[in-house]
Amino acid sequence: MTTQQAGAAATPQAGTPAPMQPAAPASRAWRIALEHVEARLLAGELRPGDHLPPERQLAADLGVSRSSVREAIRVLEVLGLVRTATGSGPNAGAIIVASPDGGMSAVMRLHVAGHGFPVADVVEARLVVEPAIAAHLARAHARNRRGPEQTDAGARVDPGHMSSLHRASALLDAMDTPDLEPAEFLALDARFHVALAEASGNTVLTATMAGLRDSIEGYVLQAVPNLPSWWATSARLRSEHRGIVEAILAGDDTDASRRVHAHVAGYYSESRITQAQEHATGS
Amino acid sequence: MTTQQAGAAATPQAGTPAPMQPAAPASRAWRIALEHVEARLLAGELRPGDHLPPERQLAADLGVSRSSVREAIRVLEVLGLVRTATGSGPNAGAIIVASPDGGMSAVMRLHVAGHGFPVADVVEARLVVEPAIAAHLARAHARNRRGPEQTDAGARVDPGHMSSLHRASALLDAMDTPDLEPAEFLALDARFHVALAEASGNTVLTATMAGLRDSIEGYVLQAVPNLPSWWATSARLRSEHRGIVEAILAGDDTDASRRVHAHVAGYYSESRITQAQEHATGS
DNA sequence: AGCCTTCTGTGGTCCGACCACAGGAGCACG
DNA sequence: CGTGCTCCTGTGGTCGGACCACAGAAGGCT
Image (cartoon, rainbow over all chains, first blue to last red; front, side):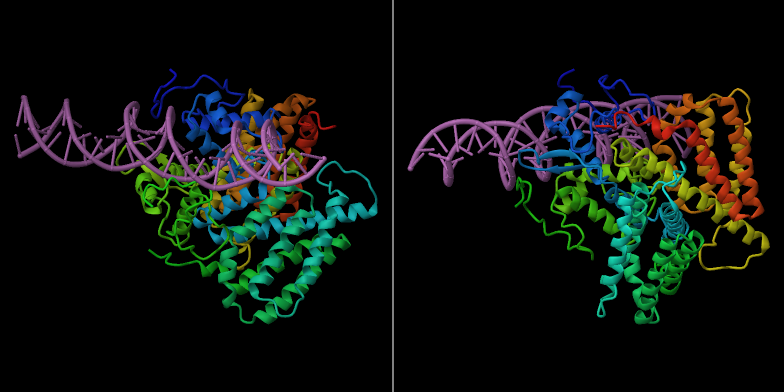
């Protein structure tokens, strides 16, 4: 059993007693490694900042090859769960980091590239999600201003994160710089929208927004030439941004929601981004 | 150069001329492979249903080892972009599939496990996103009923997908089965909520909802014992579900949104799921 | 005491080998 | 001539061993 040159569907490995969910049979070796890490994560034995065991040791422990362990770690790395570094010392090795934004963006970006996510769907998703986030933000802000009364459902926006709104405003100031290239402007714009989500203090919403934005960044850039007038458009966007922030600060959820929807829809409609990627769809 | 036993930061490989975005330097070999596939995906040279080149050939083409290629493919597989199969014939090999749901769920689930996504944030995200989806659905339905007038922004819900609403209703009927175990009931419940998102015909929203649900499935199950009365709760959930569907069919976006929010918030509040995972947070 | 050299551990990469598998080609037989 | 079986081939899956680059840590020298 020691040097078993196991083929595809062999050696159930009998090491991991399957935590609780029989979801995946883990027939493949790399999956064993992946699930092992997930289980340890779930059990709280592995937390952000902790080191994963060295690849060689992990391989020995699980009875799989280092290659398989590496494949699992690679997945975790792309998903933003671990960070790997060569060398020695406390900063080397595979370390749990749990930075969801990157992973989320990667998934969405790749699926847009692979035609699993039509650009139109991403745009529409923004139209559905972003206004809701803005409204959520506005409600939270209104509640915070009125007093620290605690409603248990969907009201928690810690004041600490509220500084993101200020950061968002700072971005708006930066966007007022006269001779800004479209690419630069849109980069700031992207950061503004993500900062808005960040202001909710919700990691999931933030990562989702980041993913949505990143996944179509390329298409947004490509569509700039479609605009009738970059000058007019950017001026309008700047103005709309201010209005959105004001609505949120005023605690007017309905207004905030409507403004965001109009803002996002307006830009995409004007830049005709949806049609921009319709290359050779007819067949 | 042929048998160059390249170390970590060596051999820029000079093969891929960097498509257009200098985002990642691709210093690592596996990243070269991953970006190569992404570029081909983006260029439309690779579409769902197509085969990836055999691993050995891809390795040779890119000037990297098969191991590195495999790591890239592994990532694509976990992300739901390709499906691999052994053997020969048209069904074997790595095939582009673009099924985002699985990948999305994996990312979210792992990040919840890795404490990058607090359960409370996932719950809150549902509270923000789901009502918005329901409202979107209700508006689309009202619009479809009134007539085929086309508003360009956020109104597109093809009638074909509308059948998902019927499928959702069928799930509701299934949930009326008397002696349903909580696990079975909640599985149907999960499918109902995903079916709702599906009814929007939006792949991104669907995948996101699936991810949100899947990522906390375990916690939802765990929290069932916290309920004062499973019987009363399940009865209420069933009733609320019907109400939600009715509101959507009636085209009342405000009502649909409010009902969904109350539904989701009510359950999570009653099951105290957020506190359920607060194991040893104080330190 | 401080600096420099060496050692060690770690990820990164590559190579060559073998296994299991599923079609497909080709042959033998009816 | 058609049918069925057998062998071949291509493909992913896995393994083990090797070497490189790197960054601390340990230890010795000045």
